[in-house]
Length: 604
DNA sequence: CCCCCCCC
Image (cartoon, rainbow, N blue to C red; front, side, top):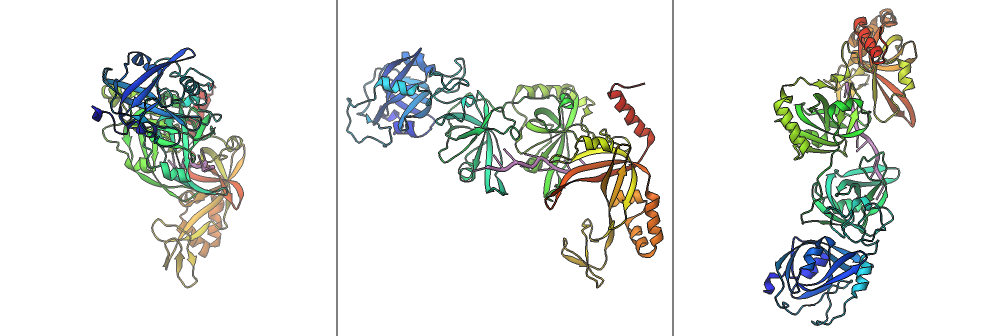
């Protein structure tokens, strides 16, 4: 008979989280505390017993019918430490394998849970126990166990929120965590986990990863730095549930987290993370989907959740980050929902490379950023989460819609291709003065706008440079003054070079003027002359060279401009670059202007 | 203690 009890089960109960443990119930006592009854048991594994076993109040009706000497299987439990040293196990779920009747199995000795591993005392049935009253009072102290939503002073000792919640008793709800408690255990699902990131700045360097934790009451972000990063990164898996004990809580910086919690946690030396092997009712990731047509009304830089059918997938492409020169992989996909609108969603890095867009997968994205470049589009952030074909009702509804209706529907795209429509004109057409008033460029990312402007000045000096002749390089070469030109980027010497243009120009309209930079093909458009021809003119026909510039002036164009703050040795300056230039087509231009008037409610 | 989130 003893064989069926879990060998070393009592030790496991207080020191590990395991799937299930089989014990004999030696005694069971009712503890009256406040308005809640609570049961306390003496459990034995045949070798050791402990009386520091409480039953979660949700098991009160089971306990009332539990006869001494019954054999039970404990399916779920948590272990709490009271007064720094004494451990109490709280049984959250059990099955009765044999009800009562049997004799005591073996001659179990008392198991010592405070500090020392095991008592060396010999088996005795009259060993000292903490008084029921004392244990009960300690157990119900708010600092060790609080269960109510929001309040740390609740003293009920029952599962919080009183209702059908299945957050285990003895485990703190995430929504109750504050920096003012230091003893707590949460049971939470990891819904998102970042890659390891390193930093190196004036305050030092290090590495970190962060994760999003969720239980039935709320969510919270947790970050593990350096030592803790190494310790926990591999064990933490997305979608798994963990008991987490002790971490530092601090006020969350709302600029960087869209999670609904005023606090976030930082793992520290004392943080313990244990996988929860037992079944829980902790939900999976929670979304608050914004339907795609609603995105039109969402401000840029907002993070939102969205769900859609992937109807188009672009190849992975590589872009060069403007500020750092870093190469980044990206992939654009188009998602559509039953609002009949579709939007572009950009995936980065591994997400982009590993994405499989075949068979129109449903993409649920949490915390993606809304951009207003050329209409509206969406982009993943490192903190965003993605689920493919999630098993949620919105997903099934969308699939049904797509199969029946959506797949044949002409849907409207909120993301205008390349951000322009009609004669290279952006829907985002403004005057130069408007861009100034709106402080375009005064944020981390570049701003783009289109404007109708007159070319009023061209800086001839330094507009041409000797560029590397290697295909696609275009880096400036060094004239070695022996007929050889050296490219530092290719680390090669050439016997020729290409003339290339980098032209400074001033554009003006009725509101303001702006200095802009035009590269190669855009400069060629303004000058009406190739860079090679211009280079030749400069060397052989000074008058014609000058004339090329004068005849280019005072013409009107639609310019598409990129505005971004740049730093030149600690000095910040707004830099405007021409990304497209088109001769002014009055018909197209008037159409856009009329539309603007219409949207302002002004029309003839 | 990070906090970048890119490109058109």
